Picture (cartoon, rainbow, N blue to C red):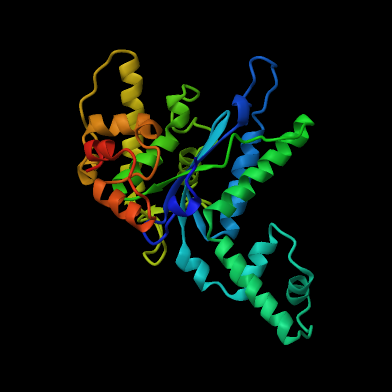
Length: 325
């Protein structure tokens, strides 16, 4: 039986989460169906565009994503402090980007000179409190992503029913080593699946988006920046983009050389900072979902998360001890 979401997400312990959604019966989200010959490649743009729209409204940063043929990955960061700093009006306007608000809220936003009773003002304030919580909630973020894609796909195929296999799966990411591993796992997904050979040709992934932004000498507009890419007062990923890119390139090259039987000399210097061996790094970034089905981090952080979420045990503790201690 699936765990309730409050046992999977706790922002007091970590703001980072890896979320996965898969299609029913191996239906195609994107790509080309070899049996029917139907091409669904255009749907990748749906997903990417929707992710960018959601990050503009929500107090949730998009760290990484990969849109695959029948599933998608996102790594999200909950910016709780940013949501709490919004004014009531800003909260209402952000929520209205996706939902039609009650008439009293519509009037409050559209008619500056309107007069309201105390009860109406109390209702507006109560709704803003609700919306503020939703705008920093991963469940609402994924709901607005998955429902939108499901409706468009069903309309295109002229059918009804479930499009996604089940509710989305989420993994709490508890420390820097786990975070670097899951980011690389997501960004290298097309290369592992042999549908891309380089990072730049990995279409509809966050790493391609970051590389395109770098080529244009810009900071990725819809992605959480790395350390050194923005002023210190802003939230950023806790390592440099240069180190991260070096890790990805070496991991990609190692995979390519292993396929042709060529050995490579160990040269991933950023792994020294993460205190992880090259062999362990390559194994984790290839088998992340197989190794970890729940929260991911060192044994200590996994115990801490289990206590905070009232879980009786932490799954995959042996793998955490082996690879992330």
